[in-house]
Image 1 (cartoon, rainbow, N blue to C red):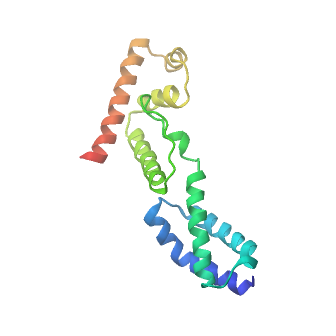
Image 2 (tube, one colour; image 1 turned 120 degrees about the horizontal axis):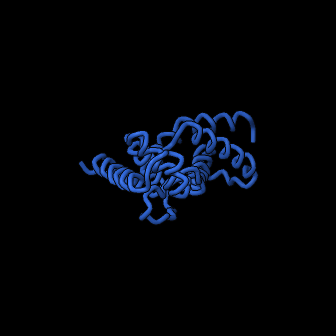
Image 3 (cartoon, rainbow, N blue to C red; image 1 turned 45 degrees about the vertical axis):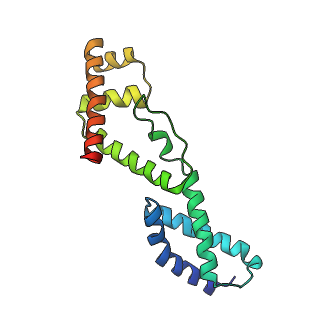
Length: 169
């Protein structure tokens, strides 16, 4: 494959791919760059098998769509953050739409988390995310067990309340 063809594919992908991806996925610029670079690599690798029944840009865009789908399916950056509430089971999502919803859920839970008070954030962080035992948390924060329980349940309630208000009200 010549450099001119690769540049043509690269320009076409930078023009069309971000719009396509933003319709189906929650993307960042580094995701687009990563997908385009992998697409150019695959196109250069698979060019001898190209049958010339379509334009090279159309052929490359087909590669880019499958690479994007695999990229977002295998992208586990956000999977560890989904289990914020204790009673919520960890899910395994496969479709691109579900992955997009999962990322949006992560951003919304993170937004709700940042709306909490400092002490509530610490409780949620240490107890739910870091899985620190209760007795270490009360000693670290210098609070009683009953006050810990009260703050923890209040924080979970407020987190759920803020999340629900953002989505349904």
